[in-house]
Length: 478
Image (cartoon, rainbow, N blue to C red; front, side, top):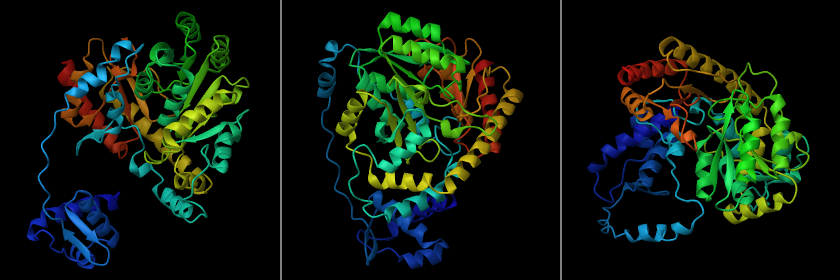
């Protein structure tokens, strides 16, 4: 974290001094910059690389860094209005619209402005990421024989075997495909299982990224309400009968956004209902490795209790590592596996081999279980800090369920509260929130907020963020 901030500061200093040099003029040597700014050679190299990426500096191996010559003026923008007609001309024939609203996804991907506390983040704060372990794994992976060669399209056999063991039950390495992140795995599954225009049953509320995937594929998301024990079986059976759907997408463990865990007596019932409907269950097991220290034993994945091939299982290493460590798995058995494989190959060919090799190195190292234990304890502490601060400063925001896994809390707003007004007021107060509306595929029953406690620096920032949210609520709620 310190190294990253030093790079940015040095790049800012060098950028402000570029006018001292004529175009094509040579900048001081790396050694001179190290001595002048009292930073490491790595910091100098990264700062110069940042300026080179911005087109301000040209680096020449063995010669040094030079101020870039003045660019030619940009060509005038053309007229792209014709695209509006081209993109919508055949829309009337679509069974379901394919235009995609990515705002619900971008909320958790976009970095907030400086000074704004990130309660909307979807990934671990850099201080919680296993950066040293990942760097060591990547270094070791790069030295493996054939590390830069073409991998099998299904993924490295050893990595597929590791994923199969972690899922358990009837899942074998032969039924696992290595994919590039959970989002990619979900997209492949939905394209394989449902044709454009078909209904797909989704939990309500649910992950906005999954709704975006469904709509981009021309599918019609149909909501099935969840409660504290997960998706409600009676309503699920009704939805299958009413729609004829052949797919349910669900998150049985620490559901996003509610944090609910599918109750033991519902697990078999959900699978039986789907089997009777001739339907698949896409199990998005996205945060199994972000369990809190006080959770107790976890239920097995649904795929581990599914001998009939009802479940298509998606799991990922990304949430427990870094947003850039995009290695995940799709697991299934039966004829559907061939369709999943075909779609993945057409879309992406394969996951880059160096990343797969690094994943193998990481999960096989002693650092991996140590990392999982550390984040388990830290996430519990952050969850407790946030729930305590909310109870003290914002008791009017209802918290119906405190999860024992995952990285966020789901809050219900007082009746009549305008989500957009509160989100805007919070941003003015210096805290970024995730509004609840994008989590519903139909009209929501009330206003909600999702607050992440994983993307912030620590408990102190959580307390300060809740204090700022109190000020925003005072402004909006009166």
